[in-house]
Image 1: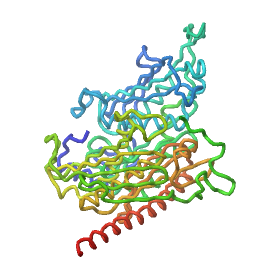
Image 2 (image 1 turned 180 degrees about the horizontal axis):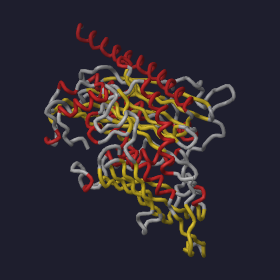
Image 3 (image 1 turned 90 degrees about the vertical axis):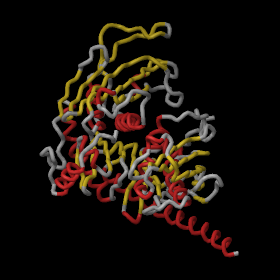
Image 4 (image 1 turned 60 degrees about the vertical axis):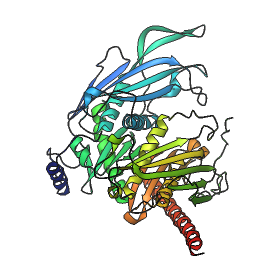
Length: 265
Length: 246
């Protein structure tokens, strides 16, 4: 993902502006780009959402199927998160099996949802040890302009919140679909907040060119009560301990802001 | 064979199943220069975790188009042996192993002067022979020593250690059972000379205050690991020096 060229002059300009507390696109260091959210965009999916974070664009579709539970948690449904860096989204994305970037993206989003217990998986059991519902969260990146993690986390939560489960009954061990829907049981709202370290400063929601300049990346996911539920450092640079703790504090405020956009009422 | 989850992981006086206190590391043994073919190698036993690391390079890059004109590429493969866990793990790389290979590489790269070796690759292999929690941290600790053993110029050694929350209490260096039965796990890698956190992950749930405490606890663990790393390297080069002088 690192082969988009940013000229040396521009790299320097981005870094210098940030060291004086400004950004090339006019944002403050802790401002997000504009978030646009549409949900229910794919009728065939049980739930869906499309998020635009500046020019970054991510679609998430939720599909629900009946399958077997994991043997260690026979009474719980299964949640799986997968991310596709679709080649139409960037000249640096290539067709083929998921690379480490898409795996990391999916796993960071997964960790936020799983560790905050956002989806009530224990309510998705049909027959203990035999049949449960499997919730597939498929992240589809449509345009890459930086900060795919936050855009994907917002879109995933929005899609889960608008997911409708089909009603069903069990007849002779088989799941039969009945008319009507009930909402997927979602009880927590994790929000990922990603920082880039540039010129030794923390910058929220880096766009693509800032990602090319950054030394390192840090994502802090905060759930509805302000607890941290996932953290991931990325990139070849490092953070000082003070920066880590500062990031965690900023993340709590920013997560609150983002949550208001996604969770209504 | 599945391990049974015991009723309590920590007793009333703060003693854990393996007899450790809350702020204690597992008994840790490290050796360097354990494989003759590799340019650098090291082995660690941290509790029941047993991990081997080897470095090949700097050497010509294969395939060639991956070479960079101004620096070496550091490549890293974290891999678990099929027999390293309770239930056999398929030897094909899992999504977890791919993610860990990436974060481990990013944890070590800040320590290496990659710009000294343009158009080359430094290949790092981490094999987990037996896993009992904290393998990414032990992997980083041992891989950093393998890099040093290969004589690759470095800014500092990278020491790694995890801390977490188990049964409501904050604890250092979790075992597999403590990780699975606990509430949170925070692996951290640290370069003391630069005050640099080069790996930080978390899963579980912690309040902001707990998060701060756990991160600092992990840091204390890293400091102890760092001492061990230095002693291990020194011990090896004392024997090398003696052998040369004879």
